[in-house]
Amino acid sequence: MSEGQRADITQAGRLVADYETNAVLADRGYDADSLIDSLRQSQTEVVIPAKKNRLEQRQIDENLYKDRNKVERYFNKLKQYRRVATRYEKTVVSFAGFVYLEPIRK
Figure 1: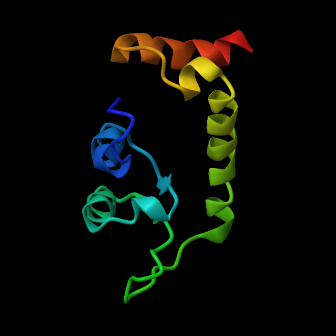
Figure 2: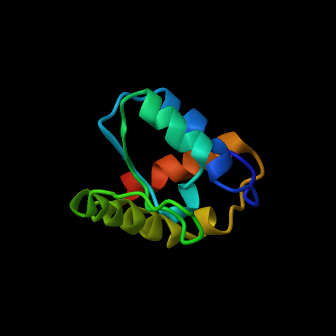
């Protein structure tokens, strides 16, 4: 976990480094050369659309990219839990506890 105002892309490399997977799905916000290069080195399919301002657009598996919707829906449900959405908890451990508790609660 990181500070609420910190961009998610700063943590993405460390997050996916410990997992063996066939593909990583993400939105354009994760289109960073360092992340894409590390995924390709580990033989992971990159399903991240290129930003509009990239000179060389990447081709992605559109059918696989549609599955990203499931993750987005999960986060939208999680944000309905006010305590998580407004991040009332002061410590990372307390905040993480409520993030893990919410899916169990429903």
